[in-house]
Image (cartoon, rainbow, N blue to C red; front, side):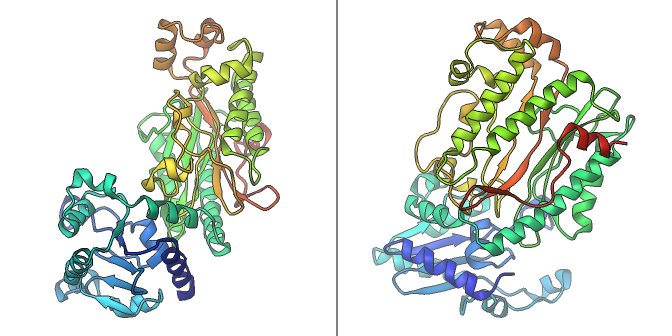
Length: 460
C-alpha cells in the first residue's frame, strides 16, 4: 500500500475541488456467480481505492467538504464470516493505515446522508456501473436506478479525472511492475506456441504467469488465431501452420494498477511474405503514433498519423488508392482499422472509463460519430504524467468487407478485388504502454519482441 499521507493528500485535493456538500464514494460489493456464496473474484472500485485504499467489500466513504471529515462506513466480520474467511484486522485498524480515523457502522450511512439532504446539502456521487450499487444508491438517495447516471455529479467526475489522470511516481512504479509481468506473459506465449496446440493451452500459460507472480490478469485474456475479432475471448481453436496468433493480455499489480500489451506472431517459425507485408505496415503505424507522444499534442493527432500510415502502406500493396488525407478524413481506412490507437491506463486497464469517455478522453467535447473514429477513446491534448497505450492494428473482417463492398462504400479509395484476397488473413496488433514526460514519452516496462527479426528469434 501507499503511505497514509498519500491518501490524505489525495482526499484533500479532491475536497478543495468541490465547493460544498458531501462526496459519496461507493465501494464495491461481492458479486455472486450463480448463488450468493460462490462469488467472482472481488475487485474494489478504482476511485474508492484511489482515495480510501481499502480493498474489502461492503464499504462506503464520505468526504464531508463542509465539516472537513473523512468517514468510512462499514462493518467488522461477524463470527460466521470469520469461520469461512478467517480472522482479519478490524475495520478501525485497517482504516488508520489510510489516514482515516472516523469509522461508522454501515447502518449509519443512511441517517448521515438524510440529515445532510434535509439541510439542503448536495450529495456528490459518481455514475454507478454495478447493479448492486445502483440499488444501494436508490435506497440511500431515493433516486431511481434509471435516473442515477443523469443525476451524478459532473463536477465530481471532472475533478476526479483531472486528479487521477496525472500519475505520481509511486503509481508509475506500480504500473511498471504490472507491465513487466505482462511482458513475461507475452514472451512465454511467443516462445511456446506450436502447430497442433489448442488456443486454451496458450491462454492457460499466460494466466499461470500472472498467478505465479501473485497477481491476476487485468482483463480477460485474448489468445486467438482470429485476431480480426477485436475482443475475442474464445480459446477453442487448434492452431495450424500458416496462422497468425494474436495475444492481448496484461497483469494487474497487487495494488490493482494495470499493464496492457498486445503481440502478434506466426504459428510457424517465421512469418510468410504476405504476413511480413502487413506486419511491417502495423509497425510503421505504431512508430508514427509514438512519434506524436509529447505534452500539448492532441492524442487524436497520434491516431490520425497511424491511420494515414496504414492507408499509405496498404496502398503500396494495391489494396487502397487515392488521396490518403481525404480517405482518412472520410473514414475509408476504418475498413482495416475500426478502433482507436490507444487509451488511458492506470487503476483501470481503460482508466476511469466508468466516469465517461467524453470526460476522460475528450475534456467534455462530444465524440465523433464517424465509424472508426467514434471508437477512439482518447483524443485530448497530452500532459506529463499521462499513461496510455499505443496499439494500432490492421484487421481483415470478412463481414465488414462484404457489407462495404455491397454498398459500394468508398469505391474511390478501396480496391475490393485485392482486399478480398486477404479476407482469411486475420488481424495484427502490437501494443505498448507509454508515460508522457516533460519532453516527450517513455516506454514503460520491459519491451516485448516487436520487429519481425525479434519475433522470429523467439520462435526458434
